Length: 489
Image (cartoon, rainbow, N blue to C red):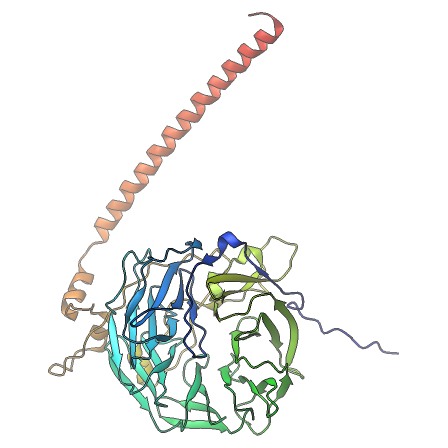
């Protein structure tokens, strides 16, 4: 008699979510009330950004992660838009650069100072104008530097080279109705989109062609979402004809039938999926819900496996997800969400319970790092590359961020080499920058480092002498105390 395994084996079966203590939340943030189904929140290992209420325009707050507690009403914001901000996204290759889309039909890219804002930021590094209606979707390319996708209520998808402030591709005939969301695939060669006409499309942006399309992916009329998974499959959330919320998994090679379809419940908030390619876990948050459900995606049927639900009392207005390189590896943290309430932002930590304090390499395979695999010009020329991976074994220390550099293309001298385009700073000619970079400053740097080392060594010697002196003093006092106790003194 053979015994069938009743419970599926999975290292993520016992993942549990835990909100942080109150003093580690971000209090008194007036989260935006605009009616738009975006996450309203973006986070990276340095900063938390939240779209907030603003009178006479649009604004978002950028806080260093360490600035927890009550946020002063007068805290400076990023406030250059003339209409409400609808979507924000941190650049994956520079933790100090963020893009925003707004009802004023523009996309703006901002450089945040290294230590956060000390005064309101009103001047973007670059303004990208090309949409005729409000811009509700912003998505950076996962592997090519300075390539940004924007989608607006004009049903147009634009792809920009932020480094030269130029429009690379305009896709204006592929979506007949409002675009709900856009997601790049693993190497950025394709993207998928969910549209109000109930279709999920897979699009090659460089050719401007529709690679695959599934009509009525979900039959309900409410908003749906589609995201690419690491293996090229597409995961969607939406509603059935009876307004029940659904999850589905699709193979782009055959979109006739879903590989898996699950019904969840009959709530009416749009489901926002967050995907972790390293663990193949999808976290699903409903707007207005007070829970986060998580599922493991596997190669064998039924493909979508429910793991657990994190439940809290307060409904969520939006949600941000920390990239893998910003997590605390020593605590077996596999995800961290930033849940927006009406007046605060609350981090929620997802942990795999483990007894060992050693590095858990099965939980933390090499993950996408902050280095771009391609320059924008290489991607436009047809090259593709997977993300450059980094190990999380050593507590990851980010390299110094380089400023976002914009070089307006000069139509009179267009024969400049591509390298010069990418290396010129905003407001400075390329030649100046290259000359400055070529200055032999290595000897100065080494001299500075040697000076610092000598300072540290002197301080160490002084501390050793002080410790020795205090040790001798303690010995003398102990001897004196011993004599007093024996009645000698």
